[in-house]
Image (cartoon, rainbow over all chains, first blue to last red; front, side, top):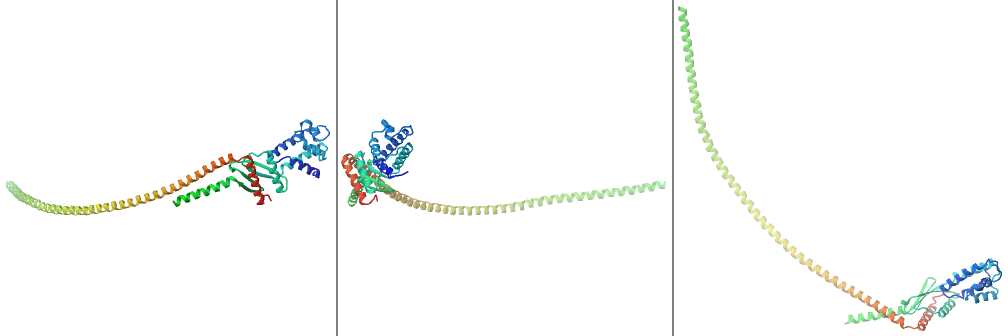
Length: 171
Length: 171
């Protein structure tokens, strides 16, 4: 059952991740939380998991529980977790090819910029390809946009070779 | 006694008759032998004549045959000679034709080989150019890639994103 509470919780969880690697890791963690349910223990999910809750999930569940966005019963909590996992799997994806290994900060900033441009939270599928030399290639909804140093280099080289051969020919 | 004389006369007449008969037979035999002899002599003379005639005829025939054979042989020899001359001429003509044909084929093959060689050189040079381009491009990529700092990389990615936004790539 989808509610405004769920939507807010989904946003909170979605904002935790920026790339596909992060999404996979979070989904694994959330799947792991399910085993703490139906153990005849009352309370919130974080209470039920106690010390087993990962460090990165502590502040998130604290916020959700503080805002009253988390259901109280085991079945509802299970549904809640499945709903979060589903939402994470269905986040739109933008494939981004870079020539270097970006830092987490940079990934977060890039994700924020692209999500703002698209108008919704997206996940970046990051690929490192040193052949592009520098710049980036973006793939979204079947379209491709590239602005790389490799393209500029190839063009410049082709022009140079052409000039050289024309120069040779004229001799 | 009269009867006995009559018998004797009769006997005498019969004996005389037989004697005459005998003589007649002898005479006839003598004549026949004479005739046979004559005939033999005539046959011999005739045979001899036939022989001579045959020899004459055979001689004439063999002369004739010899002449004819000689004549025919001479004719064949002449035909063979003219035929040989004809064959020799034919062979000579064919040799000339073959020589001309060979010269043409050699010239043709040479010209074709030259053209193929020129093309091969062109293709080879084009391949070398391409390979060189590739080598230079790879080297440039490698050098540039290593010489670009992290902040420069990040800047170039932001620049690529701005270019994508300008082109309304994400809308």
